[in-house]
Image (cartoon, rainbow, N blue to C red; front, side, top):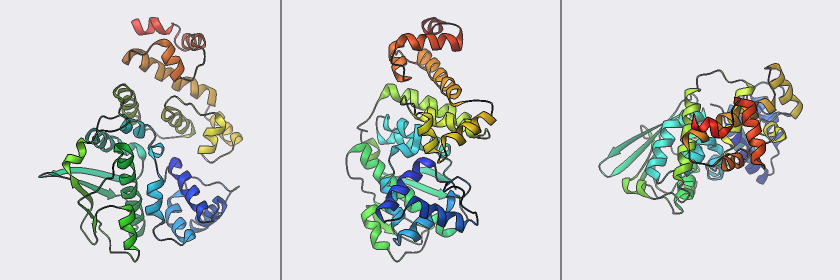
Length: 328
C-alpha cells in the first residue's frame, strides 16, 4: 500500500507535536527500506513504511488511531468533494464504495445489510499482519471522524469487529472508535443501525454532486493507465475543485523541488502550463454541456478573473467560443 501524499502531510504535522521532524521520519523510513536518503525527499518507493515508523518514533502505539482523526476530506481528493455534496450518508457511503479504488489505498469496502443494521466490512490487501492492523486502525478512526463532520453529530456504532488480537493499548480504542470493540474476529467490520444512513449531510450540494461524480467517473475509467508525473499533476489539478494550485504548490505536494517537477514534465514532452490548460479545457466543456452555469460562472470556477480571458482561451483550445460550443 502507498500512503497518498495528501494523507502524508497530516502525518508529518502530527509527528511534529511529538517533537519528531520530517527529516527524522525520512531517515528512519529510508533506512528501514534499505535506501539511502536523497536530498531529504520522501517518495512513493518507500512511503509504505511511514505508519509503523511513525509509531516507533512517537513512542505512542495509538498514534495511527489519533492520525485517523486528523485526516479530513482533502485526503480523499475528488471523492471527498463528491461525498460532501451528497444528500445523506446513504448516498455518500454508496459513492465512497463505488470509487474507493481511485484512492489506491490497498483497502476494499464491502457493504451489506442484516435486518435493521448495516455491516461495513474492510479488507486490507497487505501481507504483513501488523501493517494490516495499522491500516485498519487508520481507516476506521478516519471513518468516524468524517461521518461526524458530515452530519454534525456524534456517530456511535453498535459494534466493531477486528480480526487481530487485543493490543496492550486497547483502552485507547474507546476514545477514537465509539463502539463496543471485539478482537480476534474473522473480519474487520463496523456495525451500526441502518437508520443512521438517512442522516442528512450538512454540506449537501446537488449541482456540485453531479460535477464531482462525473469527475470520479472519468478518473475511474482512466484508472488502469500507467501513471507518470504528467498524470499525477493532472489528477491534482482535477482534484483542486476550482482552486487551481500553482507549480510551487504542486511540487510541494509531490515532495519535490520546482526544478525537478519542471524537468520531469519536460522529459514527458509537456509543461505545467500545458497541463493546466488541458484540465481547464476538459472541465470547461463538461460545465458547458452538463450544467446550466453561465460562461461567467465557469470562468470563475476555472480561476479566470476576467470572463473575456476565458473566452479567448476557450477559442484557442477549441476554435469556437464557449456559447457556440454549448449550442452545438
